[in-house]
Image (cartoon, rainbow, N blue to C red; front, side, top):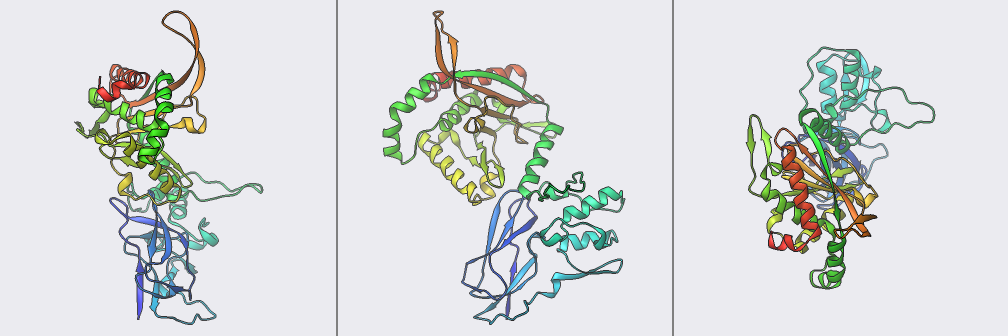
Length: 403
């Protein structure tokens, strides 16, 4: 008896995924809980494991197909099954389309769009594996043809519904479909620009004292806690101090109301091969420096392996991003909606600074940027917030004493 492999629940507000990679082929033996197929959502990449031990007997959704929660991915036969010379393919994988189109491999979502709009799939260019059609291809075709037929409303969890201008590629060009995560990043950044009144204020901070503190205690800290003391935990703690004093930067707009948050869940922007992700440090106000450093290190390693969970990237009241690790001297970060603020850290660079006594010294300086939603945060608050962060970094004892 065949056991169905289905798309699991993907998380809050996530309804669709893309089949990124099959790790097994038809006829392969599979152990219980062994990874079978990798799905990519607009937030994370996750693996679907085998519900039983047996043999992969059918694949319903090819690589590149878009599938919904509960959709059939393939089938397993319990026990060892001798693979046939001709791979067995589940019949639902082949669909006849309108307008006399020949058999084409279509996902349920693509097939529904084709049928609802009475399209001929054979005249639409596919960008999926082996030139198969994906949902974005059909939507782009509809947009280009100006079809006024009803199209399912896109939700924030389905960035593939965003239609981008297309053109034929040249002989020395290569076309690669955007990942769902990259589409979501693009969609959310554009959403932030379209809905929020984003302004950025800048300051610079002298890193002398915090670097001296870090150098003095780094060996003891690492020996005791098993993690290195970095700048990120210090900046996170400095932001918590400032957010307490300027709660609007930690708030969000909800309709015609403002939601003030009496907690400090700080998002930390992390680069990964799939794109930018922002896992959240929960309750940063009660976390120790060691806890924060440990979480950030864990986030980074799992982000590179695509192992972050949806829950870890949801929520967040404020975000910190460090472009300095890539060499950025100055930038204007975009807020992560519905948040109202994001702090940008940058490269530490020695610059000549005029000291209070009039002398000039070469000091390790960092530019800071605070991007904020001017609808909820006034310029005065934003400037004072950034000055508060600067004061805490230049005199780290303030963080400990909240002074």
